[in-house]
Length: 183
Image 1 (cartoon, helix red, strand yellow):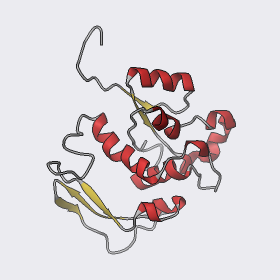
Image 2 (cartoon, helix red, strand yellow; image 1 turned 180 degrees about the vertical axis):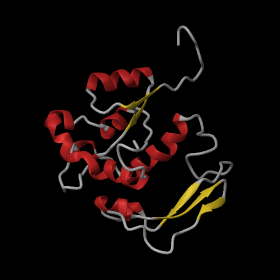
Image 3 (cartoon, one colour; image 1 turned 135 degrees about the vertical axis):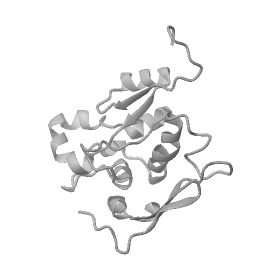
Image 4 (spheres, helix red, strand yellow; image 1 turned 60 degrees about the horizontal axis):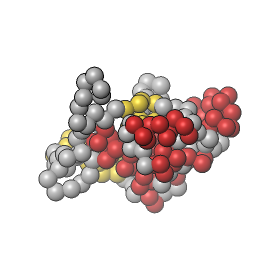
């Protein structure tokens, strides 16, 4: 900022996988947007090598939100599946395909996870005035889901199908004839 000042730089740190409280506090003071990736479903068993102490601060969504740090969501394709519903499930359930929980203390609510992917993502890309929420005057970018993610078990969020996708109020993706049948 000192060398190239801008009124709203919105610096981001992608991944920021294993954090400590001093690092989170520093990110908060600097106004950095943290873009964690949560891949407990696919890689949970591999993460056990980090140990419980580090897992308790891996992708620390809960702690960061409690500190008031802005977050945005993403997938890390091809490292993990590019699937927003699975990423939201990871943030809420913190559970691997093997049934084990990883850093359960960092779990967030479904509403918080959706906010990270919608409003958080829009803010991180300077698009909060046109995207991120269904608000008059915005673009009306949204999806229609087969079920309400707030009303299913946290470990079933990934099974929710996207029935349609709308961009600028125009349907661009119709529902498939059959469920998507994930593995």
